Image 1 (tube, helix red, strand yellow):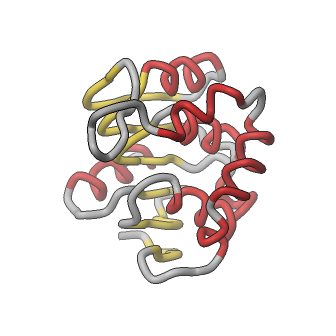
Image 2 (image 1 turned 90 degrees about the horizontal axis):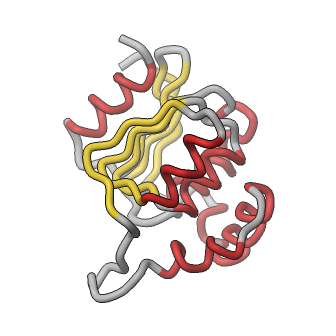
Image 3 (image 1 turned 60 degrees about the vertical axis):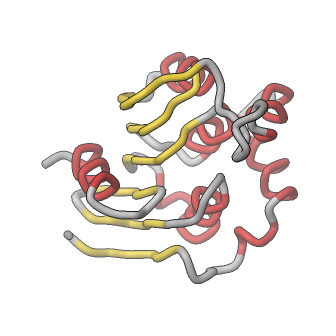
Length: 153
């Protein structure tokens, strides 16, 4: 099974919010909501993520920028925003999704996700990483809801 299908299968069969697979091995998984899990994966794994496949519950513009920042090669999203799709497709990232929406909504469902709005000002993946890192400093500790793995699950 290729990496993106393995990541997707694990995501679909669990309560995880994100799974990263490379070379048939699960590198990282998280049950954290929002962008924190992906930021934590970048913090813990850095360049090891280049060429990995990401299966994520929600991929908006901010998550798409982070995927580009760390060199993800394939993305599957349960829920994908049109702006996230545009960024990933224009960069040549292999992309699949269960459902696409014009934009990601906030948790209350009554307006746009704040990160979807904030990320419109980002001009590069590097800027996105820098600004999101500053906004979510808790992502740069190992935490209890994320797990770095090296297994062939």
